[in-house]
Amino acid sequence: MKPLDESLHRRAFLGTMAAAAGMAALSSPIELLAEQQAKPNRSLVEGLEKWLSRIKGRHRQVFDAPSTNGGLPLAWARVFLMSNMQMGVPAKKITSVLVLRHDAIPFAMNDDLWQKYDFGEAFNITYAMTKQRIKSNMFWKPKEELPIPRMSLDNLLEDGVLVGLCDLALTVNSMHFAEKTKTSAEAIKKEWVAGIFPGVQIVPSGVLAINRAQERKCTYCYAGEG
Image 1 (cartoon, rainbow, N blue to C red):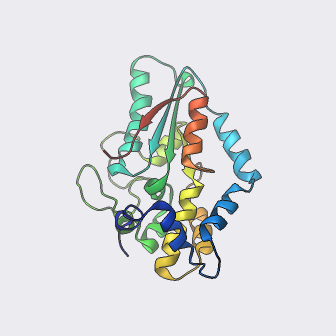
Image 2 (image 1 turned 45 degrees about the horizontal axis):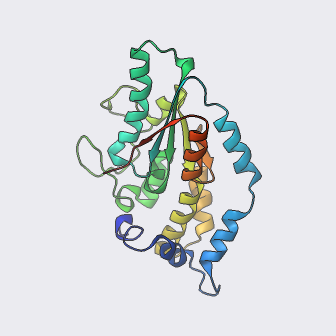
């Protein structure tokens, strides 16, 4: 399976969606995907609004994670909490929001999925401290200590960090994996959704969640690579 940087990034995004859809009998798979995404989804809308309603306090920041970036998006979400507390700011006045989109979606999924779909290889995921490729989700209840205390995803959620996961990225990437494995994109996405960690909120798209968080007075921080 080729790394996504050789497929999603070297081909035009719309071209990838068309190829990944695997629906040659349809005149326009891109239009089909757009139509599916345009339909109101009450569950997603209600979940998003409830999630956004938890944004509170004077100090609010949203971290935009389009890639795993060696685990740094998780570290920065923790650092925002830590440094505010060092300033004497009470927790009730702080909100840290982390939006996982594009290539960062494996952060939110369990080890069974990492192993079955080889996310470390497919998404070319490495750890910032060692530069080694990651073969399992070391950021959920880690067996080894991470460089910053309580920066794992489970600890962030426990401490009130709002974590959103892009539904559009789940859809497009499941199409890509379906193309590679000659299986059903719908079945893959269903399996992925079932393997998302509790507390992570699926949002219609990462860019929408970032926009809505900013509308609620969150400052923006890019947490991707480069």
